[in-house]
Amino acid sequence: MKISRYGKILPKSLKKGDTIGIIAPSCHFDPKKFLRGVKYLKTLGYNVKYDPNIFKKYWSFAPYLGFGPSAHSYIAPDRFWNVRSLKKYIGLLNKGKRPIGDAETLTDEQMMTEAIYLGLRKTDGIDIHAYNQKFNVTFTDQFDEIIKELKKEELIFVNEKRCCLSRKGMLFIDSIVPMFMDNIP
Image 1 (cartoon, one colour):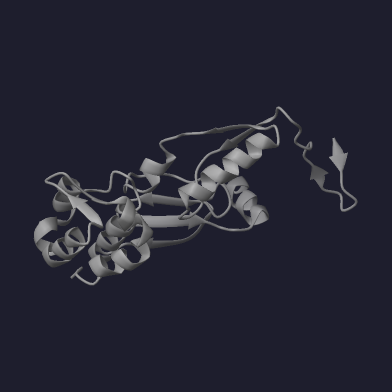
Image 2: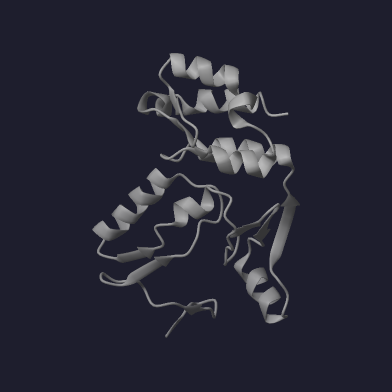
């Protein structure tokens, strides 16, 4: 056991062959950067473990709990996150209290916005049936004009089950998402 000059106990240093477990993202994250980070850690000789469903859970409105400082959790329609300070986090847990830093209740408009924003970032896109049920609307009616325009430009694919961006559409995602958001009531 090592002790720092400030009297803090220091954990053992990681070495090649050690396993790093990634539990959950603490906030919205870019899966490409996440996977690049995993690859980098592996090149350093670490074993990296994570649930491959992390992307689906986080981007599909499935409920999830985050553990640790700053970790976010979501149980519809509420999103909450833990305090940022490790010292405060541990202190609250030791007192038998939940270490919640803050919380918000999402409105239908916010949830629609996130369904579009996050759904179009997934390769399988937005599940139209789930969207219609969750928000009691008809996706193709709500976004009819946008869908026609984007189809004409070959930026999007839409059928009775899914709405997803084409490869070309993925290049313009930051321009396409606001087009949908402008039609959210």
